[in-house]
Length: 237
Image (cartoon, rainbow, N blue to C red; front, side):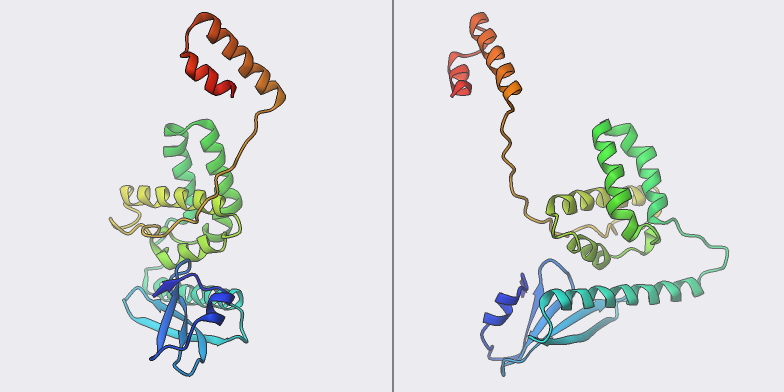
């Protein structure tokens, strides 16, 4: 069962008839186990590259707040990923090299963004990469990045949902191109199936200068009969 694990939700959840696991909808692998006795403990479940599943207990509720347990889960995941990378490095020949996310980002900008996107979009992509994405993921080998890792990165930006979603979109496009460029196997984009945060629509009001310009344009359109009177009236209202 996937839910948004908050302190209020956990505290009010009734005792089940049998042991129950509630998994957080924003952080795959992070959840809480609820016992019929009412005892609740945070859990982190992880599957390695060989498909072996692990589950560890992070601590008990209410001794740990959900935010603290999430942070412990992120650290646990990071440690597991580092251990796997160390093992893979030992298994590979010393001459083998892997393209990093930073190198993929540079290629994305030069071979895709600057060619197919507008200057403003390229500028925003570069800002997201420099300020948000690469400080967290830049050193990671492209072929080694897993979905849980990207999910944790996205969840860490929950305080700025619009920026989080834009960063996820850039990463998704980069990993799609990584498949095209044979840097990852087909169909392995780690951004797939990750849910974006809800975004609130922003209301913008016209400045005084913009209102004057709009009024002039409407007056001109009315004089030249270049626009429907109903449309002009609706805009004036």
